[in-house]
Length: 543
Image (cartoon, rainbow, N blue to C red; front, side):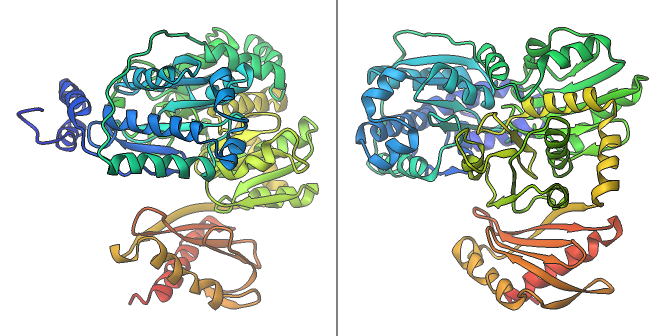
């Protein structure tokens, strides 16, 4: 191990504090990742297992998690096989597993370990190399593969790596699958198992981007011909910030080369320029500068996270978060493209889309936080099929598209909106708000004592739904409001008579309480936040 740093965490702390000058220390991180054999507690959260490279995400632990997946396959558990969408392990061996990674540090090396273990068990493998999450989802269908293993921590900082498992329908793995992987892997950890490296005997490369393009053509939700024609003829400008992620090059392959595009941060950089590579408001600075420098009448920009499952929008007038864009997507797909169905949204997402759906006669399904909860509404055979499914944390998919959230789909949909309406996104948004109402969503939260993490915090917060029932009156700022509905799908969401609302839910992993709110005026947001905090402190007995 390194003679300078006692562990990978110490090394990463130095690297992240000065990314431009300390990147040479990545060799020390690799040494820790290869030599550290300490066990880790394996937990698959809402989007896979994530851990710090060299600390808990090590070569030993990646081999253990992969071995646990193999044992799950061989178990023949009926519930798990049904969730994967196969009959037994022999079907998995024949149909095969797609393995790939985003462009983070040691991605190819970790993938090699996964490939070797799968091949040693006689399982057919494809190696995707650098790819994005929605490409795995589409690729599974196009290849009729059994599943995929995608080594990515999504938008987490540079010191993280991760592992996503997608079953044969291409969607995020459900609890039936992830719980068994956790159970087997942690049992192996407890037993002191330290499997050796088993290099793959062969590499069968697969171009997932090509398969993704074929998938788009097959599904036909996006009119690629219209987009290419618009790029040839339209007076437009598009800025795309890839934040050094694996989304780079995708839009060019789909739409072709065009001088209408400006691409930002496409270079290799394992440290993402020292920023958290997420589609945040702060990270949109480069896109906004590019848009402001353009004189084109139609322009928009996006930022996408490294594995291509989250996206944020802007034009020269404003940033457009998913709370707004998801509602715009519903309106566009239904009104302009004639697609019928329902709208699926997570419970903490803006009710702007509810107002649109109500007037258009479209049913609304509100789910728990986590894109995997949209699966029933994105399946092709569903009798309650989603026109669009989205969550406020920048994830979206839509009719006849992947069960995985997809930033590229979100980008193409926005471009088609502009091509069809002839309007910038903010202009289209203003038109819709003029017709359906104005909504101002936001989120915040507070930290609580560590002793409250998990079930104790959940129990205390459950008092809120008992205290504030439908019909209750309370003061928000200088106004009295009546509770018109109480939704307890995920935490407690109180809807008020003016269309505003607040939702209070515990973090599942941290000693924190999350607040999601929506006011009907920008000025009233603070009053709704203060009400949510007051309710929380009352429920927790805080002064």
